[in-house]
Image 1 (cartoon, one colour):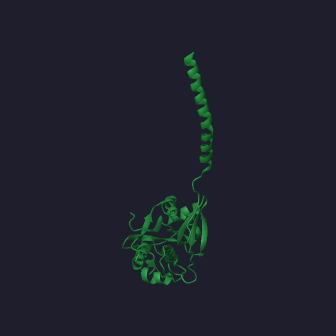
Image 2 (cartoon, rainbow, N blue to C red):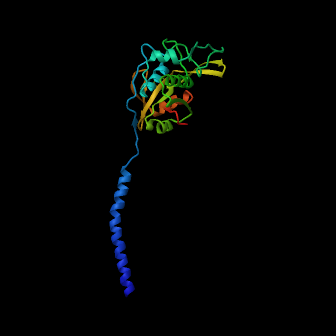
Image 3 (tube, rainbow, N blue to C red):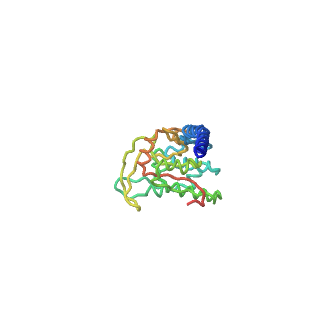
Length: 242
C-alpha cells in the first residue's frame, strides 16, 4: 500500500512536469519553425560607376576601381588604366599573340578593345594597393569557386567579388583561336566583368559598369555566363588570410 501511494505520487510529479514542459517544447518548435536563415544579402557602400562613354570596353578597369573605392582607396579610372593595366594588340586567327591572362587586348578607351582575364586585374589591384600603402589588403584570383560559395565566404562577410561573365548574361559565343606563350587561346564573347554585391532567392545583384546601376540577374543566367568564362573571379581580402 505504501509502495502504491509512493508510485502514484511519483506519477503525479511526472504528469506535472510533462504539463510544464509541453508549452516550452511547443514554443521552441514554433520558434525554430518560424526562424529562417538569411535568404538575401546586399553589401552597402559599393560604388556604381558607368563605363560609358569614355571606356566602352573598359569594364574590367571600372570594376577594379569600384572595388578599390569600396575599400577606401581614392583612384580614378584613367589612373588605373595608365598605371596598372598592361595592354597589347588584339590577335588575329591562327597567329601568335598576347594572352588575356597577361594583358588587356586592345584599348579599353576604344570600341574595338577586347578585354582581359582575372590575373591581369589581380596584378593591377595589388600594385594599386601597394602604391596606396595598403599592406593590410591583397587581391586574389579565384577559379572554379561556385557562386553559392562566393556568396557564403565573401558577400556574407561584406566583401564584393569581381566576376567574369557575359554582357547582360547573354549566351556566350566562341570567337577566334590563336597561339600565346601560355598555350592556345579562344576568345569568348560578349565578355564582361562586373561586381557581385548581393543575392536573394532568385537573383544575383551587381554593380554593373554597363549601366552604372544596381542590376539583378536571374541566378541560372549568371551561373551559365560565369561558367562560360571559366569560373573566374577576383576578391580583395586581408593580407594575412590564406
